[in-house]
Length: 489
Image (cartoon, rainbow, N blue to C red; front, side):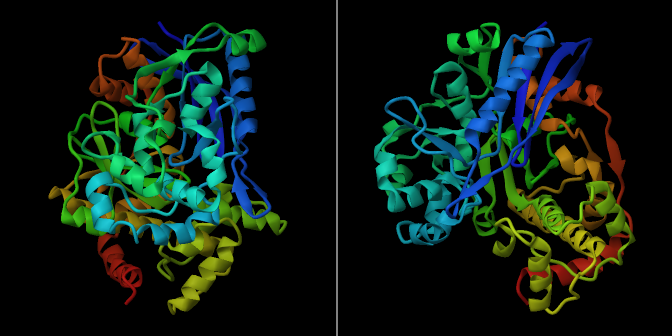
């Protein structure tokens, strides 16, 4: 019976969990939690990468004191990376995807290739944050950094390297880059050539559930840790979350809802048809030879950053308090496109929301409850909007929406999603990402047979909540208003 140490890094926080498979259930205990705070230095936004590694070490130390562990797996957000020099050290601190360096290079890149041609190869939603455009910006703005680089490692691969000395490129995290050939599940030489990155600066693709290496002697000596196996789990947090969806249905919709909301379904082959290209859906790597066909939607980031702004202004509210205020606020007074460029960068989100509403001729939310209600209703409407498009792409109609992750804690958002989509919402587990991370390791250890069994185990291990649609006609009426705003009419 293996003891699994799972690290789950979100864009705003991280945690370490000890897990075991006991009596048909996965048991988990959180042993360490920490914030993930980016740092702005001279107009560049960085991840505090070494502080995050310090917290990995803290998690390992606490796991040792809690009885030890046999395996370690790390999952993180996508697209970001570290540059490792020929001396084995970081060339620079990893830059945050919300940094503004890719804005112009993103536009310039499409002078080299049309969006449709790019999509036919990579099958990935075009977003300026993607690794492809980050590296293109780096090549154009700081070529000397790339010249000093031996290997480019995605965030979870970077920390696996720090722990083991082994350099890998796990498939699910690499698939977020927009640099893979979607059908071949391998690097596209064509795209690497366009961005100016030699293939030898990237590691060969490793599939989820494979071994990365053993904890280094240095780490074991420093932390008193066992010579545990470090796994390439499903390193992209969305792929881990999807592996833990508590369903036996073949066709389902998921919304992995946190700072970002990843909305999609699971397919056996990439969907690269004209509608998928037009609607800018992404085909990212999943476990068990599956694809996560989905869209990246701005998630609770707007709520998180609005709360941070109010804290900066000297008013601190918990998320529960803000939801309570939103519940009291009048509904359907204003909507925003949560994916509008105005909301991408940190700063005064409430002011930007008011400006968006003013520019689109809507009510301008002033009170905190009005702002949060606007965000929640806009998210629910965006989910409905994207689901309708997803069904066009796949030619299927789906009956159930599974909401996973931190968004499950918002009963208001879950109910609004059921109302807006007209579909049953099953909320949970809130720890889907960690459960998927652990499940992939347990499958590798031979303790769980496959993903289907893992999903049955997750269903037995967690409490789920169902939300049935309410007031669907009212929501449909206001959806038309939302759609007009989205489409610029």
